[in-house]
Image (tube, rainbow over all chains, first blue to last red; front, top):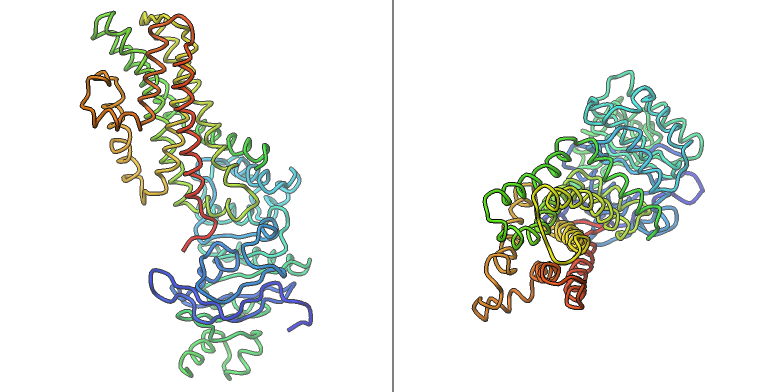
Length: 238
Length: 243
């Protein structure tokens, strides 16, 4: 862990959804300038945790701090980029129309729009309606919106689902580049092999954190050679 | 609230509408055709009394349906959650919708009343512009009510059912079918609480007097108050944090 103040600081977070505990006493930090992977089976609380960090989730108890402020503070609204699991963009608008609208809401100028379109490699789709795109392209439109205004923290809920391996590699390279330029990324995935691309890992199962370590640290602590086995070892040890 | 974000939201809503040619065509053709049908089946005298009142009913129903489905879509697709996590005021969002659909309603009313006053031979004592103003207020009322009820609908089926639930009773009680003062007292009280009654009251003033009467402006102000009230209620149903 670095000595700098964490970008995300979650303490004893409990969330109840539909009468059932979704998160149980979750505590962790996301250090600045790193890619932190949130892994675990679906239904384990990943999306709920990400929503809590963004500040759109009603929480039962505990605290979530983001960039030194309580999650959901109005000051944070243009400092966090958030990508939900299903692409939340306007299907009946073109890529450019979508980005121009969200850019106007965020107060980002026209250059920003061109930059994020290039970042997600959709330049030739500028005037295509989102509804006419493939699932992977739609996911990238949603990611492009999150990149607008170069937010300090990116919270990405399964951004690489359904993408071909080549695109997945390119996007992870983009995440790495963003981290190198000082951004912090909190990325969820249920694909264990994506774990090796992260600086740190957070394993979440049934609403509990079962591991919070670097990849090397996790493998050493569990005496395993891949994240999948480490995950199983941690579940069995409990 | 900022003018820029409100205007961009209105622009975006109109862009969405522009991509949907069939909806735009239906919104313009259907009320015009229905008015023509009415002019055809009733006597000239009856058309002069029903026509002006119906002129305001179309934008109310249409904008109610369009807005409730559009806002419901924003809620279920996640775009509303995304927007509310951004620096946009709830008033920007609501205001943008009201502005966009208000502008479209103006176009719709212009087409329908243009045809009615020329080809269909509609005749009123007052200025047709006063009727257009009532129709515009009705459209805003439809938009405001649609925004509000979309919070209580879990899907499009439910949203569409709010139309017969909220709008049809108003049609029956507003004085369009039976004059209000001939209704049972209890129903008159209910009628007094419904916004469409005041819209019809304003329309009746235009039908019977050559200039805008104080009664006309009073009735229009009541409808406007209902619009502001429903918009405020609609804004209250937008939550930045959800369970």
